[in-house]
Image (cartoon, rainbow, N blue to C red):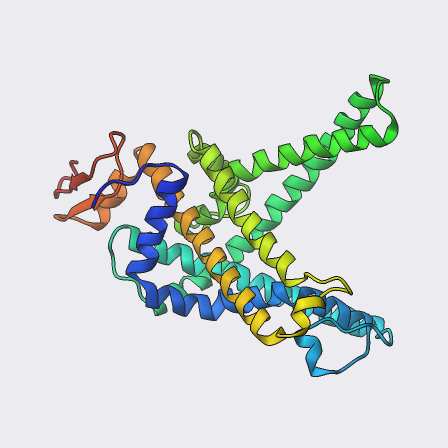
Length: 319
């Protein structure tokens, strides 16, 4: 097998190789977690519409329905919390199971559905705490940055108030993209290294050095793909979910959910592969290979010269 380059297309190529080699396994994980998650995202406008109305028509699960009566506050709160909890559980479960499986597939180990599901018990709460820490850090940095940037822009007395807001938002958006690149590997660090909180964010920023552009490119690529699918799903001129969706609502929803499922699967796999590449460049895979593949020969799909690298592991862990 030729060595894929350690860049945007190289990461996607290696991700495709792993997913294809264990297609049934990843299909099972996708059906369990990613397909319901995709449907929840596609059905978000319908869910919001149902909160604004008291209609019980079955067709509201597949298309937009105009609001009639406003439901009670307790009903709205309960449904919102249930929707958020289900979406969060599916997201974290998909990250944990797919990341664990891709890591095994990267080394050519057998991947098993039971092992992937068993990893959820140790990863879900760590992912939840790390996500909370990341959101808190992002909110704090964004708030502080917005105050500083807005004050600095206004102090120049060149732009009016509206223009100052626009400049501040643009700069904050670039800052958020930079942080996304730095923290891209944090979910993989949580699953693989069993850390949580701020530590995965720090660890990700260390590993991603030299590959930040690749991480940002992957993040934007899959974000644009998901955003495009959401936009096509909600396309219509008369209201959310109307237009061409009125004719074939079931087929359109199913197709959009399937495409989004594939996008999310490849996004998670690419993130895990990028993590392995970053560890290899930092020279951190040698000890892991020595510990788990004693007296084995492992073919790794990378090296600085972009040639197949054969790593020999002996009892003394000399490579």
